[in-house]
Image (cartoon, rainbow, N blue to C red):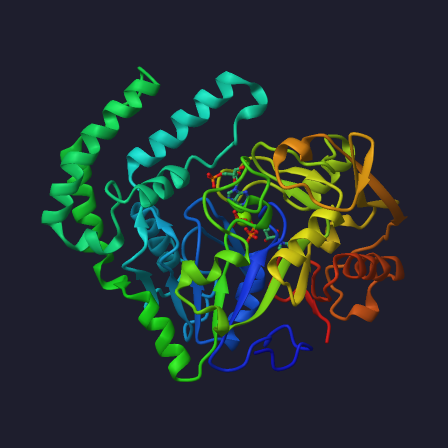
Length: 444
Ligand code: GDP
Ligand code: IMO
Ligand code: MG
């Protein structure tokens, strides 16, 4: 259902959906790309993750940070939907709605799926305790989660009997019945892992949840029906990914991943969109690589090059403020992500950050135990042993932030982009030269 692949804004026909997903370890600039594409769509649906995500959108001299609300929210005509595959921390969502309102942004067209699962305070405690236990076991075994309760909330979803969904927040009796059982049991489990674990008080959790239901009641709806209504009226849906391919629970650098299918492979289950409705995939990649938290990162530069990138790219987490680990672009990993997701077009972000480096190494192969390969290994164990093989290309100079046409980029910057698309196997249709919505080059 791809009408014409020449336009990154419309890779799908009316009545179909287009997805925007991250191709690396997150923070590729998905928020910016979604904000740019959103006005051409009737709805934007987030399909995975929770408040572990941090998406920045910059326009009119202002920076907005979103964690749960889709990045299409700045366009009042577009329906914003938090889909069934998301795990929602209602307190964080209420805070986000209030912050937007203070900034003069309306959430009148925001909806939250009644099927989405709820993140409770005990999920966040468990997340923190498990992280601490892991780091005590061995320095390199901790995942470095955001401690937003994501893993424990998805674990409860799979357990079923200990899960609570958004629709339950509107049923005080059911909340009392469930939480009066779940909270004491969870307190006992956490005390068994960590004697000092702070217990949760069941009654206050119940009251808090009833309050959340009251505040969020007007937003909670059957999101699948909303999406189907858009298709029925021949509208288009933009699907927003959070986290990214190399953090995908099945296809990322397991076990140093998040707890959802954040690659394009999770789109249908997390949004309620039939596979045949999915008409196009935009993959977002930085012109280099970053990673937050633990896990292998073959091209990491824990040196002055990494520091140069971190400072120029403001590479500090939107969610946790942690400095991001920085390194050269890993084309082996990028090609893996392009193929896995079936990417139609790449949005290459933060190209401006690399200006001023004399030479740009691109990782085009891995040496694992003396053997050369161009394939991305399926887990962290092998990835940890990788020695990257680099092809070095000439760097470029100058301030790119005012460039709006590909032809106006320095020749070496254009060659860098062309090298990437040839190796990765998908065209670069959008290039970021600054954080602002306007600082974007569109290539036909
Ligand atoms: P997301 O999680 O994928 O939405 O990405 P984040 O918002 O967490 O991180 C991307 C960061 O890069 C944010 O601070 C953006 O404002 C910024 N950004 C996005 N695109 C560009 C770009 O092309 N150039 C520069 N300099 N910054 C960008
Ligand atoms: P966006 O949407 C960068 C990382 C965490 C940690 C691992 C597991 O902004 O790109 P979790 O809290 O999910 O259990 O942590 O995944 N992580 C992200 N890193 N950007 C994100 O989201 C991330 N979401 C999760 O740092 O290493
Ligand atoms: Mg982010």
